[in-house]
Picture 1 (cartoon, helix red, strand yellow):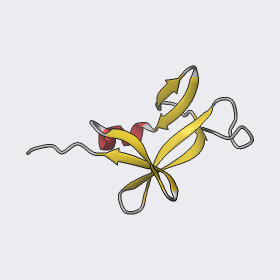
Picture 2 (cartoon, one colour):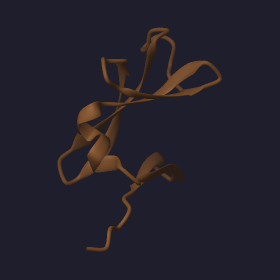
Picture 3 (tube, helix red, strand yellow):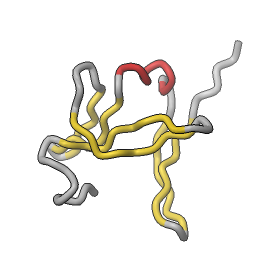
Picture 4 (tube, one colour):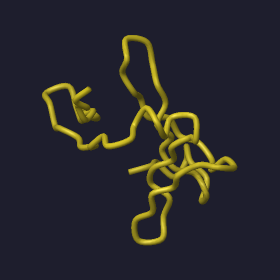
Length: 80
């Protein structure tokens, strides 16, 4: 969940790429063209249009670990 002191009422978690082919989450506001996932009226995930093709067919989940929750993005494998 977003902590109220860090996020505004229209903020959500923005999915961003990081080095090594991984993705991270950062608090952000909706931008033009974003894919927005809402839950119970709240924006919970923001994905920029520039990442649509990279994430096409991907499945997202999270796992609780001893170090805290970890975001999992499982990319689909396309046969060529």
